[in-house]
Length: 416
Image (cartoon, helix red, strand yellow):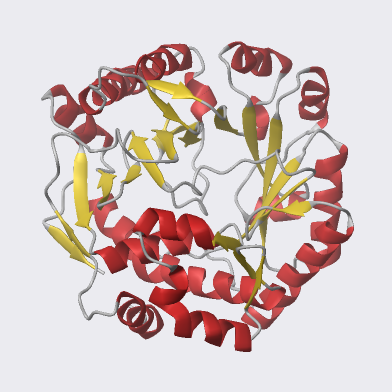
């Protein structure tokens, strides 16, 4: 565990108490009265496995996929037994490669709509090879309004570095021209060996010129359990790249709606993370509610067995203290580069400046944030240091958690 994350956690939670994840769960999740609730569904199947990808996934097998979908629907019915349909912000399908189950998505969405009213649309992650006219038409018929395409790079040398096959994007561009969506996001990775700003700028321009109205540019993170052997870029080089990317996009008139994402206009967003609360379904999916964070087992086999026995497939649960919940709230809200002071007070019944007045003052002095129109907003410097800490958080917390859960379906406990 990094000393930086440990000290930060103790300081901000005003406690030496660690994040304690235990192997228990609630039979009924208290989600009905939560505000700003989103949904996430994990589809863990891929045609091939990318060496850099840390997410829970396996190679696609039709028989296993059929069993998984049946279990997924059972899990949704186990968790969602409310008599009244609840309004939610959005539904996102991630993976894996969700489009491999395109003929099953209607069945899943129908079950979701039995319990929820979706106000901001449905999103799905796609591999570039999925983006055909036929597939896009099917997705649109299903009511999907947002797509996110995992490009990583338009340049062959970086695809090779990442273990991705060479791709002909001409068919993808034609399909995007023929079939429109509310949001078309394209994902890229930066801080790869030999990658310069000019090369990243080329990817950004190609994306926005060929159907994208939103892009996400994530830094490469070297998870300990992946097979990647890529050399890390220095923090100085990363900061320069991130600043150059941000300045270029802002100068072009694009709107920065999170640390890594930029949109052509403010209502073209793709984000399954920036929600006050969310329910996650499927193996490895996480759920964040007012008083707890939980994560499902990573084992597909054990996930199916657990649900077949009419038990929620929770592997680990964290019961929040109030200060711990504040940290979760602020960490993921800050991902958007701004925190609404009134919304924080509404959620916790305490002013943010009352709780963290000294920290806010210090961040202003250090020019990490500025205050404007009821928001605390990150500066370029602040955004970089958020990225810097987020990288520590990922390696100190998520890397450790996922490393354990990839080996054990239901660990006894995990202390972070």
